[in-house]
Image (cartoon, rainbow, N blue to C red; front, side, top):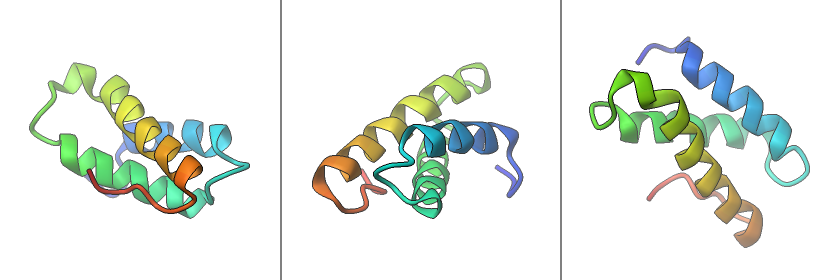
Length: 73
């Protein structure tokens, strides 16, 4: 995974918009990068975007409900 991974950039952009009212943009980016790291080597490349979106969204939903970061598992 590179620092400019286009999948991370795309998913972070989509989720930043979706969670604009509840999670800071920097927090969304952190969650997406952490989720990407967790999925690295676990998911076939063809499925990475969808799985990254699902995992990061789940963590961000927990953050939004709990009011604190949900970066880890």
